[in-house]
Amino acid sequence: MHPYPFELRNLNWNINDTDKGDLMESIQLQASVNGLKGEIEIPGDKSISHRSVMFGSIAKGITRVTNFLPGDDCLSTISCFRKLGVKIEENQDELIIHGNGFEGLQEPNEILDVGNSGTTIRLLLGILAGRPFFSSLVGDHSIGKRPMTRVTEPLKTMGAQIDGRKNGAYTPISIRGGHLNPIHYQLPVASAQVKSALILAGLQAEGESTIIETAETRDHTERMIRKFGGVVETNNRVITVKGGQTLEASDIHVPGDISSAAFFLVAGAIVPKSEILLKNVGLNPTRTGIIEVMQKMGADLEISLHDDDSFEPTGDITIRTSNLRGTVIEGDLIPRLIDEIPIIALLATQAEGKTVIKDAEELKVKETNRIDTVVVELTKLGAKIEATDDGMIITGGSTLHGGTVSSHGDHRIGMMLAIAALLCNDTVTLENPSAIAVSYPNFFTHLNDLK
Ligand code: S3P
Image 1 (cartoon, rainbow, N blue to C red):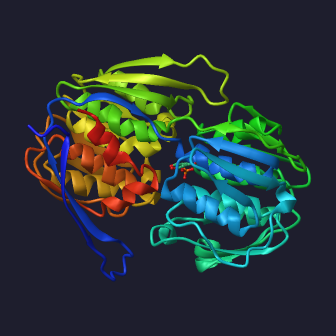
Image 2 (cartoon, protein in one colour):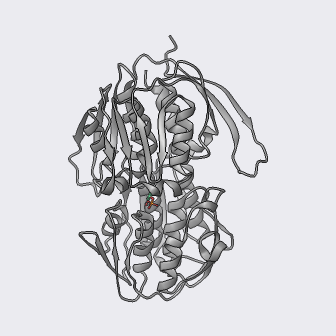
Image 3 (cartoon, rainbow, N blue to C red):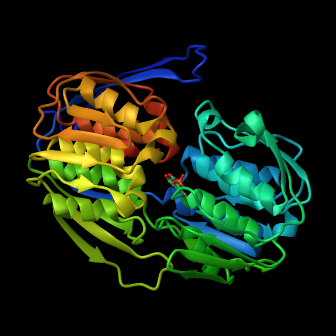
């Protein structure tokens, strides 16, 4: 028996000049699992890591960030803020950001490249909307297909000059910011990125802005404003923020990312004879939808909350092999687990009965169309899963087999397929696994640490 869950073979790098912009690299995963056992220190939260760089840059003074996620997306955020004139030092175990307030940002000489990161471009547009200079933003092939109108339209209403492909709907996007009027705006979609962009613009507007959410989304921006000494009021999905605030530097310890922990929560639940301890997982209630769903499905899961005064709640989670039943996932729960739906779909293939996921149209505008990519790729491995207009229906109890699958350049699809491979007797060839580095660069190391 091989001592590790995976034997990793044939790491091929065939870089083709495809117009998809994808790396045609592939990895062969041959599972050899006799229960996943051990503990994993969950890497820093992606959403909070982005915001720590942004807030450190727009605050006054020195912000030290520990447990920062060195994933490709967060490195794109660092690179953009450096081009905006912010000094950011990367040490072994901390990031040191020398912020000079909103006014300290300078017109970039170079194009701001956000890579694959939707959070970087949307929040950055909110910050740049109030800055009296010109910037030009691009991203990768996936970013070029993701809708930006949801941020560019309200920011134009506030007074920013924005243009881009299809009238500012898609990258490349140019922005010349300046004086901003406050906004009173009902968000048309449940999106923390749009909400955060408008809050960041609102912090620079003349007067008080009100943003109303359709459903509660992650509140890391609001928590971070308070951590940096600012004021933002939140009352029953209504967010109020005054312009002209000065933020003060603050040290940040980034909690582990529940969206990364999700892959091991599911692996522990579906691989026979497993018990995994996941340490330092962020447990912000706007992100814990996956835990509620797993509990409802019958997962053998224990949480031990940390008793600290951290600005974001954290805890340890133990997961054991579980007998699962299908469920319905819909409504206000969707934004609280939106990034976990690919791995929840895999979980559902191993449950008894049907799982229905609805109200999740937003999946179509993520790094890939995640309704399509999840259904196409899991079907290749033998899952019974069908796409619907706003989600998917999964019939549980499938035995998965090997095959050739692709991440489609989407980190969460890649990791979901690698976890699926743990259930397959035959080899799974995963194309473009390098996308995983977007949010979890040491994913395979952590997986192979489980014995
Ligand atoms: C994020 C918000 C979500 C999420 C994304 C990160 C954030 O996107 O899917 O991975 O950091 O604010 P939307 O706001 O588009 O729903």
